[in-house]
Image 1 (tube, rainbow, N blue to C red):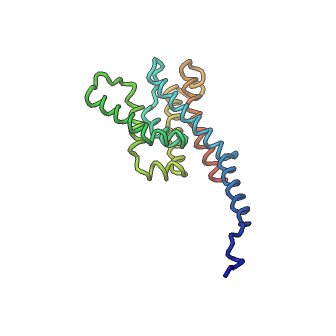
Image 2: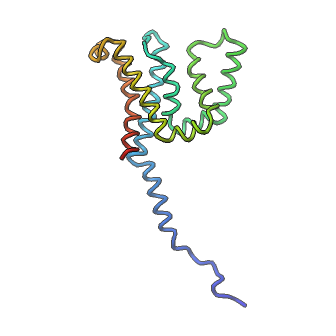
Length: 191
């Protein structure tokens, strides 16, 4: 008839799961995870700053098109997911339509930002998910940042001149900020 063992038993093994859940989320928000997200945001803002700076009267001698893959790999995931979703698709469609059918009304300074949004929207999941979240994306960012710093120092006439020229200081600080994110992420991955 009635089996006393057929009642619902209260689980007591959830403490291990909840401890693991909390500790994993704490690590994501902790020193290493929060640091990577914060430095990624700072690096993305610095790259966008260098893109804007290149389009103003403070022309630089750096290859600003390299900043597009840098932003792609360093953009924080919550911003990346917004641009990868419907918002980015609409921006990409509008940019492509304007560029194809109204090329005179599509300003030159919108070329690289439109390319970035298009890259984010159409990138395969291998790049958008796998490479962004592991050492491959960090290595790409490090190579780009080192190359841009080396080219900027060479164009300025040396390391000292890159800090003493009026336009060189802002560019040098922006490029050094590009170096912070991949170096910190590699340190966290290694440790």
